[in-house]
Image: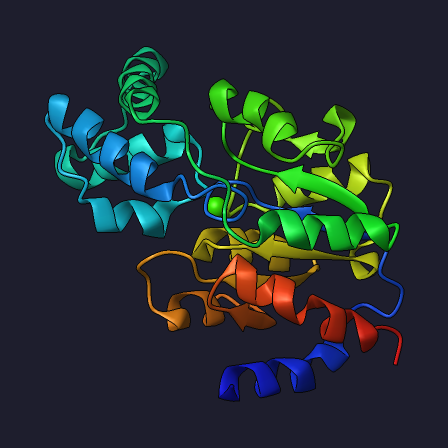
Length: 241
Ligand code: CA
């Protein structure tokens, strides 16, 4: 209750002229992070690296290359070749695909429907290159997303926490930063969105403390997508006031 009251009060910082909402995918639209964490941990172990599952949540949003090299520099003091990264990422993807399909995040569809009803543009900005999930989007969220309004691992070079993916989202949506908001679950995703100058709502759907998201500059924080969906009507009622 305390959190909700605080959120509504803070919502005065919301864009005055909201035209679009940019969504991250893993941990926001899909409850896929536990699978990613396990797959990363096991793939890295197979190649002799120690990457605890909890740590995967701290790196969430990075490209595969960035994650592998970060761990390799730490453990062996060197970066690895692109071929090696590809090999590791392939093993990781195979482990990920052994899991049953990730479940849509509860509350996400109801939020998306409200936004669509309000005539807002809806974009996806993800570091993911998991084709299985990208293909599933239009099945689980029918008539919501358009391919030309999606930024994925196939579009970007640097990936989060660099603002590049969100800047590309603004470009694809023909948007100004103060016309949109971002919904993110990962600390580095929040950092990327804020670096792109966009109002950012964090949803803490994973095991990290709220502080991990707030310290990166999240403007609002909700404990789940359901909580954000439930609060949306009141939140958007404050728009432009
Ligand atoms: Ca995410």
